Length: 163
Image 1 (cartoon, helix red, strand yellow):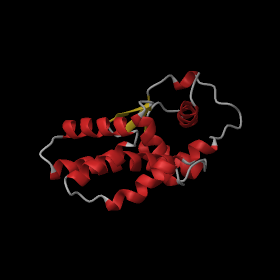
Image 2 (cartoon, helix red, strand yellow):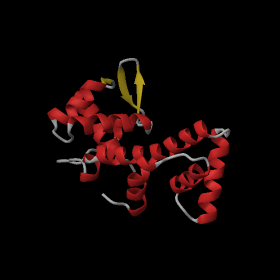
Image 3 (tube, one colour):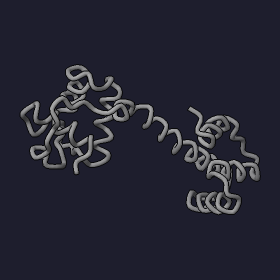
């Protein structure tokens, strides 16, 4: 069964009558012509589709990585609310990943350990104490007199899922 993203992309390519489109053609159709996404969300949607391998780049053109011709687009189709709020979801995912990455980078700078050793240590402490990896990284940082105060609020929001 096809995903909602595949239906959206199939609609765009069928509508254009072409097998390859420029990034700008896709994002303008999604945001300006169809008014399904904000310009930022349209760009995010296309980049996620590229990352998920639904689309591939060929020079300046982008083409579907699936048989878009055989996907049936329902009459009156519009994307769900979840697809429309992509930017917020992607931003939260990046923040979640980058907090731990920033902690690890700082620990590498302050210790004589490499990334693999720090990651293993973080995972060990997180598992032993049943805490989040970010908190384990902060505990390791305390041992090496490393300050992570700027991450406290973000980590707290992640732990308690504060919106």
